[in-house]
Every structure is written in C-alpha cells, then in structure tokens.
Amino acid sequence: MGSMIQSVIERSQQRKEGIVESQGEAISMKHKILQLENDLFQSDRKRRRSSPTKKPVYVEDDESDTESPKKSRVGDKNLIRCNQCNKGFSHSSQLERHLRVHSGDRPFTCEQCPASFITNSHLKEHMRNGHGEKPHGCPECGETFTWRNELTEHKKMNHSLQCDHCGLVLPARAKLEAHIRTHTGEKPFACDKCDCSFVDVGHLNVHLRVKHGVKPMECKICGEKFTYKSELIEHKKKSHFRQSL
Image 1 (spheres, helix red, strand yellow):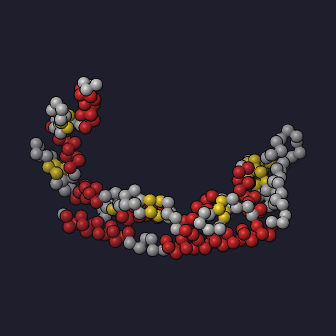
Image 2: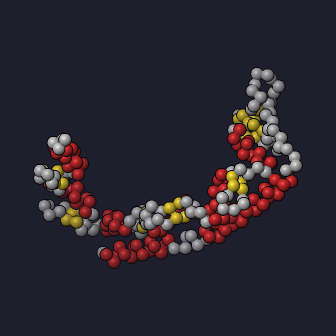
Image 3: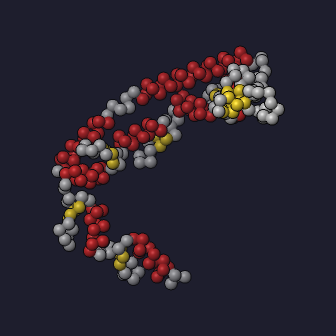
C-alpha cells in the first residue's frame, strides 16, 4: 500500500513539471512593453511642455440652470469629460489621472532609477520587472515571487499534492495519504477497546473520547482529567489560577 501511495505522489509531481517554463518570457515581454510606454510618455511630455494644461470641461446635455455644472448625464451615467480628448469619467480622480497622459505629469518616481510614472500601479509593476522586486512571500518556505499568481503556482507545486483518484488537492503529504485511504478502504488505526478502525489517528482519537470516554488531558496540579484541552484550560482558570491570587 505504501508503494501505491508513493506512486500516486510521484505522478502528481510529474504533472506539475513544466507549468512555469514560459513565465520568464512573459515577464520579460511585459517589462519591454512598460519601458516602451515610458519612452512614449517622456516624448509626449517634452512636446507639450511649452503649452499649459487646459482645465477639464464639464459638459451638460441641456442648458438648464437647475442641473449641476460639474457633471453631464450621458446615457444612465454622470460623466466628467476631458477637454483634450472628450473622454468621459465617472469620478474626478479618474479624470485627474487621465489628464497626466496629456500633460506628461508623472508624480510617481522610482527610487532606484530616473523612471517616473502616471500611476502608483505602474510604478509597482516597474519595480517588479525592472528591479526584481518580489513582494509576495511563501509562508511555508519563505521563497519570494514577483507576482501573486507565481506564489499560487508555487504553493500548488511544492506545498500541495493532488489525489490521483479524484483530483482533490491537499496541502501536505500526510493529508494526501489519509485521503487516499478513503478510496482504498485501508484503515490502519485500530481502536484497542473495540473493533473500529480509522483512516487517520485524528479520527481514532475522536472515537476514543466520544465512544469510550477517554480523557487524555490531565491537570498537572491536581490530576483531574478532561476530554478536551479547552476543558483543561477552563479548569485551571477556575480552580487554580484564582487560588493563587
């Protein structure tokens, strides 16, 4: 049975190989695109430096004085329009960000190189692609990754295993072994008080406590026993900690 479980785990690992071979090329291409965008914005900024930025125009569909001059109703949405290209936005913050495209204003500057960007998200992408920043760390082994999807794939490949019978992914080898027994019917953990047996020791311990009244939690102060750890903790608080006060 042990050889069968090992075979299942090996096949699971083989399926995972080769998934991330093309990730390096994808990241490299994304960096090139970002750099090209940066060059285009710098060129646009130099071209428009001599002309001042126009203020946004708030367009109204009718000339009624009762409607607010700050928004225009287009269809079912109130849009604020850019005076440069007439593009509409639902929030002033979106328009403000968009106007940087025309003005060349780039308030988000990289601390490691002269590059600057229109939005903070573009700066973060530059930090990851251009300077190798890896903000996503694996809680299991500490390895860091540039993108969240890389971390997710790493967890699947290194800290989880897939059942060959049903495809269920489990976070550890021991849990995979116990799960496989639900398919094979193997129950190696037998109760010494009755004929029951279980796929893992956790189920056996629950059985011993519920069916046979086993109380494995013992108070070291008075020797009283309890079924669960929470009961032992509550007992110490009520019976011993108050006495010491």
